[in-house]
Length: 210
Image 1 (tube, rainbow, N blue to C red):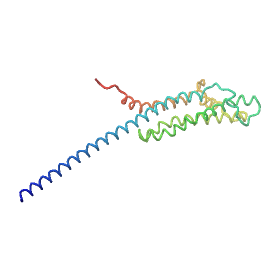
Image 2 (image 1 turned 180 degrees about the horizontal axis):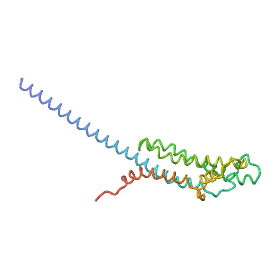
Image 3 (image 1 turned 120 degrees about the vertical axis):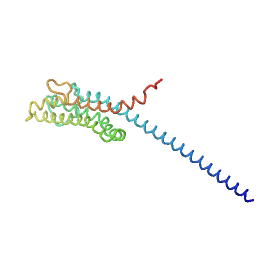
Image 4 (image 1 turned 90 degrees about the vertical axis):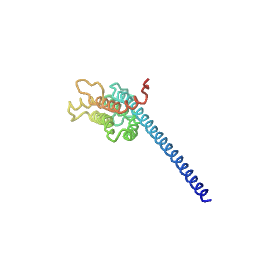
């Protein structure tokens, strides 16, 4: 009777250990599968952000080219206030047109502020510095256009000639004999985004080795 009880106890104990082992194995495999799934999701998110940032950076060239186009139309300054005579409106209008274009592309610059923190979350907080270039470019164009508009409305009094040339070079692409300080900022933005994002995208879509 004692032998039977001992055998029964040993068998039960063995079955318990076996069941525990199976449970632990399933748990470990499940945990590994979850970790793999989590890593895949994180990598997918990195790729999504990288593609979005690249598309946004490449779009910047078109946006700023549109804003800084020297060609303008009177319809772009139809809402300009404080300028009465046709001659004044003709002088001040092109500067107002630049400000109107910046406002027309407000959605693009809003997207920059929304993309920036997500970009930092993927590539680190120092990556925010890449966006400084595009923010500075927009600010410099806007401030220069406002100063030139003010000069035009007030008869251009008290403004240094060289400074005026610099302000016009900011708002209009291709100004002669004055260095363009805006385009290099756009190029720095694009290059910075490419440096971080292209390796991520290339790694995702690289052809498998045979």
